Length: 332
Image (cartoon, rainbow, N blue to C red; front, side, top):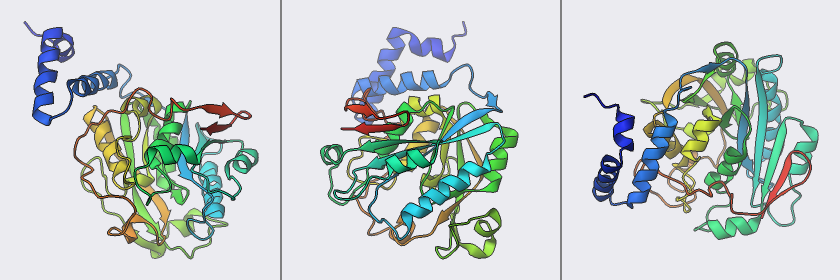
């Protein structure tokens, strides 16, 4: 008699036996294997494949007032304004989640002014004490995984787009989203194009940003999920992102590879993958592409141990959250 895979896996005997054998094979606790299987089953939900023509998308980024690069704060605001303008008068409602991680002492916060200036921005300020508790190396000032996850877990948007304050969305990406819509259960990726740092970013336009002569490098991608330079564009529906539980919080000693791990984990849990255009990234001296051997954090194999599973309190859920106004939050 035919027995559907879901029914078979959910039967107690098969489920426990399979989990036990997998745990022995990969050297991980049985509860981790069971959790991953449950997440995989949940990801195969009935609405997978459904396309939304009208939706909200939250552009998610991290930052702090530390002069990471010259004019970084001003360029970040230019990126937010430009990307928001791409979707005006369309069925895509563009929002922003800015996570201000580990603010430097003695420097003014960026979040209050961003929330005040831009009605489409919400901000989460994560105290330095939280960083000190979680980070396992003095080389890192921003923990991307915990920062992004705080925004992903609390997002109310239909879709979440993890990107950066130096990333201008390509016109092809915007056109895809507005004309073709976005599908449930799909990981969307875009090719990163590094563009000249000397361009006029105060008044950017697509003709300038996307001109071939202004490209420093077009980052080649292989097969899905196209992990090369993927940290500047990872787009999924909110429910899928939350079922993946965001970025791997077990990695507390590195910044690199976190994005690729997230993409691989999403696909291991049943996500489809589509490449939908380009994202234009301001080339700068501190990027991983320009400093692969000296980039902050320890080296590790980002492809090993996926899919990972974060705990139930992922995304700083167990910390104290204080809300000030409609769109400003402090985490301590």
